Length: 174
Image (cartoon, rainbow, N blue to C red; front, top):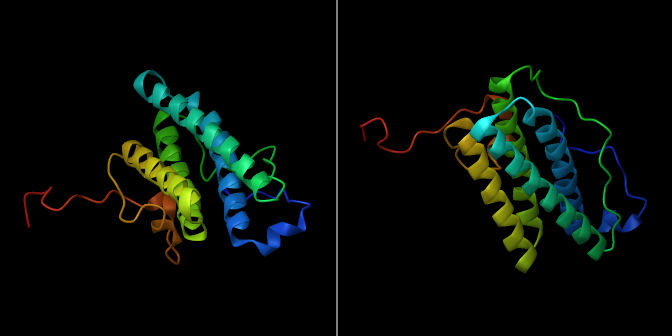
């Protein structure tokens, strides 16, 4: 699933502000996450279904807040695409869980960029969103990744292939 939106702003101020550019990229990522959770949510039930609904609601709230921020910065919020290409087929619950982890990894990357591009309260909010995405990713994956939001930025790295990182001493060795 691409987290880049093809929707463009008609506002030329987007090009001059690294902060607005990062906000727009995070907004596009949130649009993709909302879509992705809409796809995977129907394939999960019980506790996982409830977690997917909570994540979907959280991403919708973040999306709406980012749209307001884009307007506050003088831009026109990037629009959601009508549909997004999924990185793999999602025929069952196992694939849905895997997609949720990928979505959270990708959204973490967008928020890592936003942390770098902002200051003050916006940076604090972006760092909180990065932390939330990392926690959700770890829950879906069953383990964490080193440097959430940055693992998929490594040259040639496939975020879908990123595996769990074991805590030091977890295997009873040092």
